[in-house]
Length: 223
Image 1 (cartoon, rainbow, N blue to C red):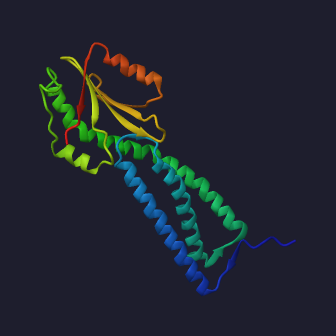
Image 2: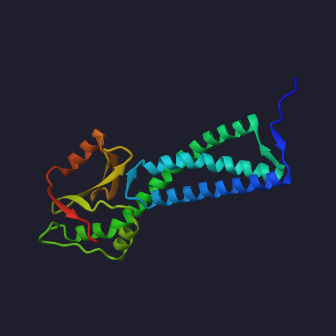
Image 3: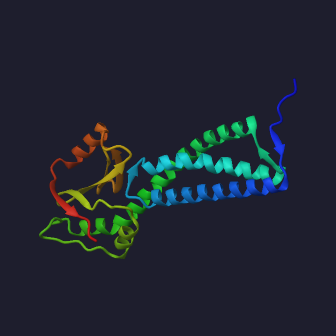
């Protein structure tokens, strides 16, 4: 019994049509991936996002159409039958790995932009640590902060400040793919930002311990 031919040579007109369709879909998937990547990189800090699910859908499409277009151009054949199914399955698997690989760097980029954007605000808090809460003190957004808030997607400006004369802890809220959200806080002693999901009780207890002995106030990040 003869094995089925995985690809079938196509006439020139059919090849041209197939190439146009494949190129169009590849451009659409690439544009969607770039858009989602920019949204994630410029987002307010988060842990997982609905945009990540978009990448899970988009990345397999990119891989499949890239292989499809390669076969159309170099082999001058149209993927059909079992080979087309095999390429699609491999594209789904590879696309899932690609989307997963992009999660960490995009989250890191979002967090890095957040840290740079709020650095001037932290400097103001440090300089006013003797009385950092309104109405004694006010905060002004400089160019760095204004640029960040102009670019970031839906910032959450309300923050909690715990302080004494020597140290402070600043906490903000972020987003997650579920309804719980995340907490992002800065500890002036370690001089580091920490991010954790709000259902992480161990991390929440660590933050609660840092608050002991400190006064608290609520602030709005300056615009």
